[in-house]
Amino acid sequence: MTQASISSGRSLLRGIQAAAAVAVAAISIGLSAGAQAQTQEITPTAPGFSAHDVKVNGVQLHYQISGKGSPVVLLHGYTDTGYMWTPVMPDLAKNHTVIVPDLRGAGMSEKPAGGYDKKTMAQDIHALVQSLGYQHATVVGHDIGLMVAYAYAAQYPQETDRLVLMDAFLPGIGNWQDMWLLRDLWHFHFYGDVPLALVAGRERIYFEHFWNDFAADRNHSVPEANRRIYTAAYAQPGGMRAGFEYFHNFEKDAQDFQQLGQTKLTMPVLVISGEKSGGTFLINQVKLVADNVDGQVITGSGHWLIEEAPGKVIPLLTNFVNQAPGK
Image (cartoon, rainbow, N blue to C red; front, side):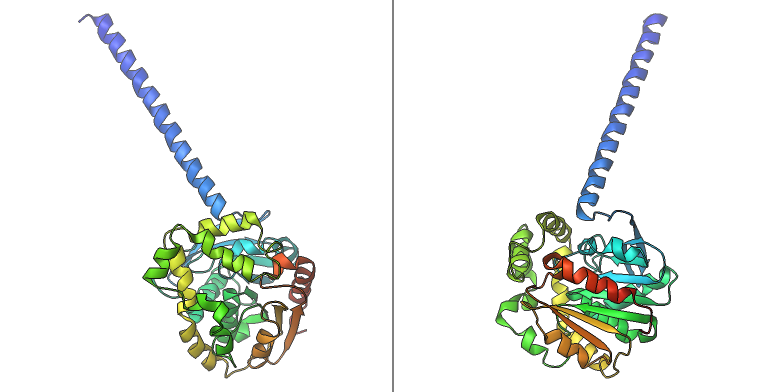
């Protein structure tokens, strides 16, 4: 083999290696972009907000944050993620630091085997607030999130400035079993291996029951874009099992809330319920465990308050949160 042939072969090899490097880089970039797109689809970040992850209380939480001023924490419910608060987040961020986590087990937060009692989930959120340097917060919760919000206020009353509880019920308080055992609320008892197998790959079908049947009008409920986001979020490995655990822990929550409820809350509490959903049930419950309660029933609305009645609910919520502490 001549020297020229060797030189030509080396040049060809270098060319192949360079082309291979470019191809690998392109594949890597493509995979990274695909993974990023998937993440964006599952957990879109609200305009003006930044997304972060932090390990607190033994669990990694995903959250969004923006704004300046006293902190407001927004806690989502079942079949939702923190994305449900998008319509109200910009308004609140004008006067407050708005913190919007995905609860333990939901969205892009970690999905551990346990810890789905609401006291523990409230401890997650308290640890998140403290990790951001805040000692006081206003806490807002809808559905499962309201149970976590109540557990937060009851465990940390001196650190909770105001509390908003939206459309569900408190396990263990008053006639709570009248709600827990309603025939239409069969999903409270739907957990375990067989239910998980039944909904695997059919998460959207299962969730449609909630989005359609819990609304006053199924055609004016959770938007289609949101439904796709939430389905993708709960279809992640461990997502449905974690969601079922929210309900599986109701009996423990009832025991915890009966004990916590022996000391009444003194901070201002706003309760918002849908006329076609819980009506006055939650308002009457909260009056058993809090002294300063403003109860509002949203006429014509079902469970999905922000989606069904934004013109009524968002101003009511923002006006209450914007009031000075102690008023």
